[in-house]
Length: 145
Image (cartoon, rainbow, N blue to C red; front, side, top):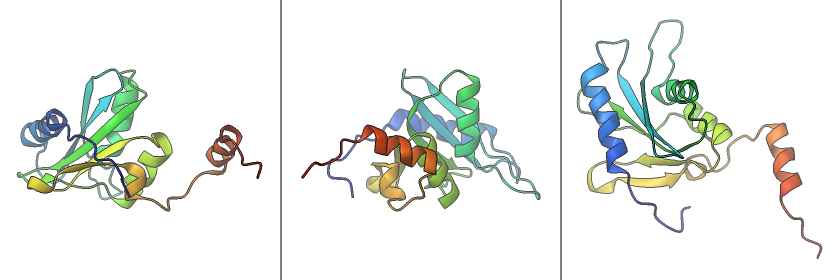
């Protein structure tokens, strides 16, 4: 678990909440996400619901960020429409966020329990693709004792 708390990015929460209030309409778009890029920019997105399968707001955000040249995201939050507040990422999104941004922080909780946690805390036993695992092994110093 997290040993040091991270500050909660309230500006990021408000950006996602604003998009949820103003852009989520009906059953097609029910969640909004906001992410902070390393350069400080905030990128927003909404989910896309369809009977053939859904694209969560967090996943749409990854593509929207890349389309804007923001390839490194530090923090992400998802907010539900109809004033549902902060909603934690689903299991698939947790895994994708871990794969794309292993150092990412995620805002979770509600009310006075809002907190920012590393994505690794949300998926501590997450699957690591072989190529990423091999890269990590090459860059991690090995013990000689």
